[in-house]
Picture 1 (cartoon, rainbow, N blue to C red):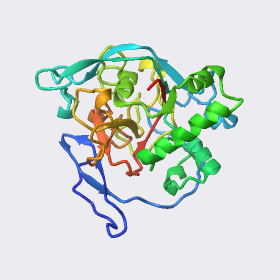
Picture 2: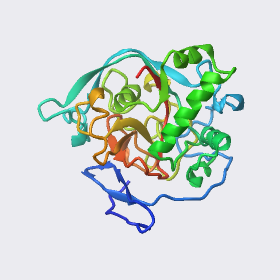
Picture 3: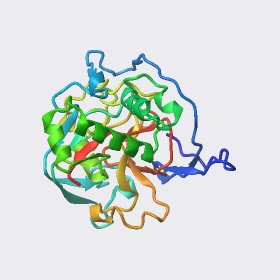
Picture 4: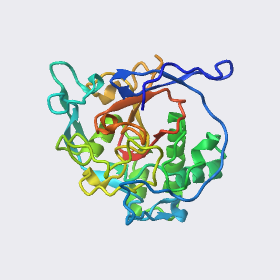
Length: 315
């Protein structure tokens, strides 16, 4: 993605929103919030996409994946190295460093679960159909098995709250998930430490699959989204898909300098907070497809390259 100067569209009626993408320098973009709608069906293919891999989703379970945990994967408790050391990763940006003296830091996380796939158009459409939620109509225009996009941070949280309630009440919900949610665990966006650990594992890899960029493992440097799970990535930590590329993914962490401290995540949010996005998108270069790259946007930003996935966690 290139670096643009501020583009101001319809500011007489719309508040400008901003996206910060890590592209060597920080870029500030004023975005228009779009209207319109429509649902499409067929998934398209792209170079490097695995034609063998198919993902089955269940209509009776809100179009979540057909497995014993509805697509949620356990990430075990323990520490991992968060951030980037430019001596190891020459593409590291400054906002990935903990400090000049301490480039990375150990973060100890309790066990949590994260969705194997990005939230799809079909899943988000089920939410809109059930609630009448006023989403951007462009959010459900892509094929049903592609990641939903044109979703704001607040849209993502609204979907998470709705899905949590449905899973608590549905007779179809696997017992393991129901017990977690009824026991006080939350279905929400991952924080950025959870997201980074899920993406890179505990061995400090630069990309979800290793230390070298690979176009056969991820949808980046392209022109459009692909169906979730299209890229076969046997080396990816925890068996997750599309942690690199396809769409940037919202987290529940406000954008602020590292080191990461979850106790800071609710401080000073009235001061024009931006929210962290992770993972890069289909039209980003390999430097933004790395596991430690940090982007951010206004909570109201809705763009074709921003989506999300969910987590189930204790806090």
